[in-house]
Length: 230
Ligand SMILES: Nc1ncnc2c1ncn2[C@@H]1O[C@H](COP(=O)(O)OP(=O)(O)OP(=O)(O)O)[C@@H](O)[C@H]1O
Image 1 (cartoon, rainbow, N blue to C red):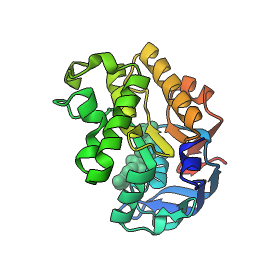
Image 2: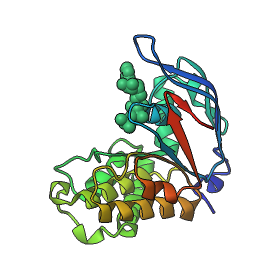
Image 3: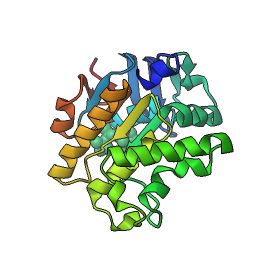
Image 4: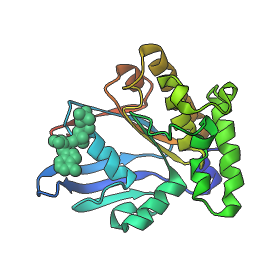
């Protein structure tokens, strides 16, 4: 049973007539229509500056569009205030970035379970247990209490993935997850992300320049000049 099914909801992504503008009023992204059924693995590719990260940030609710709708199931995040969007993300989304964004002085568990520090007392234990399970699933249990600043790039990104999964999200969003890794670590990361999504029926949307990542996706969207070609 997928994470979404376990919650009894289906978080299909629906984007309609979306426009994202810069503060200066320049159109950065226009999406007439985009539908991603829950549980799909989607790659986003395109030239530098085309708007790929902007698209990912818009569907993550990390930015508010100038107009249009972004909905995950019943959650219309484009209408939400920043605090509501942050709550939606905490409950439903795991984010993975190119540069890991780890706390260098913490251990793998300290990073993977970081959400426990900000969670209600009733959910802390489950976040720590889930972070521990995620680290084991990603082959990191032997690194124990070592600070992550001594880890390799591949190990650091796997800690970041364990952190992204610690709240058992139905959606994984990744921005260039393999760009800072050597080929062998990148291949492992692609495999981990694809299998972690498939195993639990999670939706995976990954921006990448890496053809090996796109090979593992169900569907790849090209973004050119601020528009996805769908
Ligand atoms: N906050 C912002 N204010 C103004 N312009 C922005 C902002 N964020 C992004 N842009 C511009 O929007 C366009 C799309 O940027 P975006 O980062 O989405 O591209 P990308 O396809 O992800 O590129 P890359 O592959 O280089 O990461 C670029 O022209 C960029 O300079």
